[in-house]
Length: 80
Image (tube, rainbow, N blue to C red; front, side, top):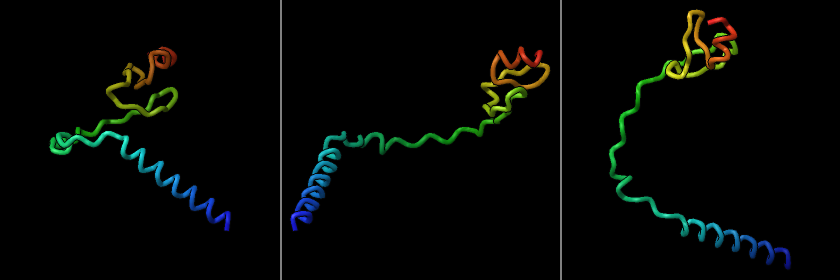
């Protein structure tokens, strides 16, 4: 019987703790809910580095005469 009482006390304590955490969090602003969502962007082309084969967006890749690289060190290592 004493274990049941302790178990119930622990459950009540957890329930009170979770409810107090929810009450402390700031409510979501109504303006953000009304703001229209921006349209999704265009898909980004993904390329692989010719040295280490790491995939990265083409906009962040370095291009050279020998291919596409993730860093200047790899570009120099390939001789590009």
